[in-house]
Image 1 (cartoon, rainbow, N blue to C red):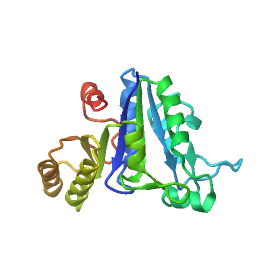
Image 2 (image 1 turned 60 degrees about the horizontal axis):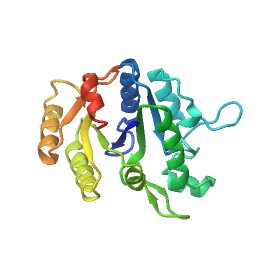
Image 3 (image 1 turned 180 degrees about the vertical axis):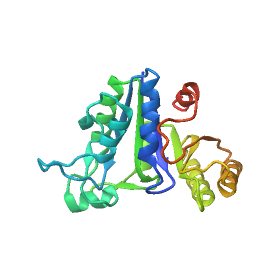
Image 4 (image 1 turned 30 degrees about the horizontal axis):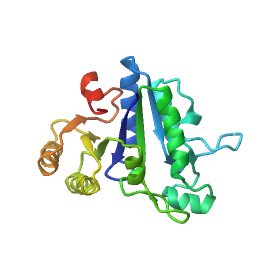
Amino acid sequence: MSKHLFITGTGTDVGKTFVSGLIVKALHDSGKNAAYFKAAMSGNARGEDGRLIPGDAAYVKGVSGIPQATESMCPYVYETAVSPHLASRLEGHPVRMDVVKSAFEAVSAAHDYVVVEGSGGILCPLCFDEEKLQLEDVVRELALPCLIVADAGLGTINDVALTAFYMREKHIPIKGIFFNHFHPGDVMEEDNLKMCEYMTGIKVTACIEDGDTDLHISADALTSLFE
C-alpha cells in the first residue's frame, strides 16, 4: 500500500513546487519508488504542438529524475494563471472529485510514495460553479497527511499560525513545517522558526536555503512524514 504526503503552502509562490521536487528527489535518490501528483495546475504554457505543458509536474520530474510519465501527474491543466475554479470558468473542463480520485489511485497503485502538491494555499477553491469543491475536500477524500511550506521571512508567523489553525479546525492532520528561503544566522528568521513552533506546536522539520539541491534531513525523518 502506497504512502502519501500533501504539500500545502501558506500562500502562492512560497515554494511548494520547489520543495515538492526536493522531497521527490530525496525519495528517489534513496531508492524509493516515488511519484508526484497535483489535482489541478494553472498558469501553464503551450508547447510547439499547442498542447498545455503542466509546468510544475515537468519541473518536479526534471529535478527529481523519476521516470513517471508527466501525463499521469495532473488530471486538470489550465493556461490562465488564476485559481483553478476561475480558470475552469474561463476555459472549461471543471475539476471533478471522481476524476481526481481515479487519477490519484492510478498513481498510487504504481508507486510506493506519492507527493501530492496543492494549488495555492489550503483554502484554494478548485471548482465553484458546477459543484463546490475546495482543496481541503480533496485532502480529506484522499486521507492525506499534510506538510506546510512557508517562506522563512517577514510575516510568516501570522501566515503559518493562521494556516495551522484553519487546518486543525477542519481536522486536517499536519505532519510538519518546512521553511523555504531560509538564511541561517538571520536573527528574524531564526526567531520566526521558534515562534511558529511555539504558536502551532508543530516542528519545523527542515529549513531550505535558496539554491539547495538536496534536503538536509535524513531519509528516515522524511519517510516518517508519510506515516
